[in-house]
Image (cartoon, helix red, strand yellow):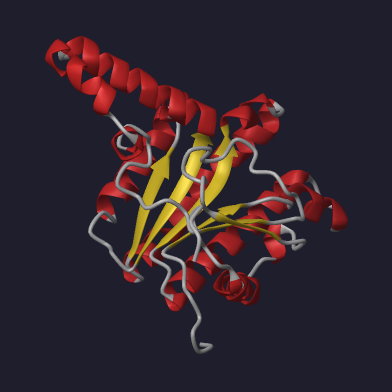
Amino acid sequence: MEENLKVPVHISIIMDGNGRWAQMHGKERTYGHIAGVESVRICVEAAAEEGVKYLSLFAFSEENWQRPESEVSALMELMLTSMAKEAAGMMQNGVRFIVLGNRSRLSGKINAAVDQLMEASRHNDRVTMIIFLSYSGKWDILQAAKKLAAEMVEHPEKREQLENIGVDEFSQYLITAGIPDPDLVIRTSGEKRISNFLLWQLAYSELLSVDTLWPDFGKTEFHQAIVEYSKRDRRYGKLK
């Protein structure tokens, strides 16, 4: 590993380009999603090898529910089969598995499988893999505000403390409470937008757009992203 390489604590990836990759190979979109699962496994391995403690992946947004039912069903089935296939490897390699998002929209079968793997892996501490499933940044902020409002209704004695709630306190109502904000956000396939992902949490994250389609994103690309991150000067609005 290069000298003076700054390794992010938390890398987040907006996985994009599965459909285009499939079209380039003369296949249906589902084929691209299946190929993308291998990139997930490779990047989890890379994160562990590089010393990254948190790797989060934007797998399915709230807006993705508007896609054709056949594609949504295929994606959810792929999620189920991938969890079953990768569970043993996660346990062997010390990977903690977490799913975050509006899970009320997921089927009972998927939620049960998610809960089982999250519980089984909760003591693993080499790297934490977070899958954002049925997630959107606006939804996250809204659910946090509702949670805070409900707490004020249930505990009127706390209302006088409301004026003193700051950014750090409000962050504890977000679905990512207890997880450090991403240091580096990578979006594959050349797109340069965050697509309603972690709107609060990305306030000072470093953003990196790469042209590589997600199924072609491997350990070399992961390492090069860390090299690029090492060149960044993170000032958080301050002067140095």
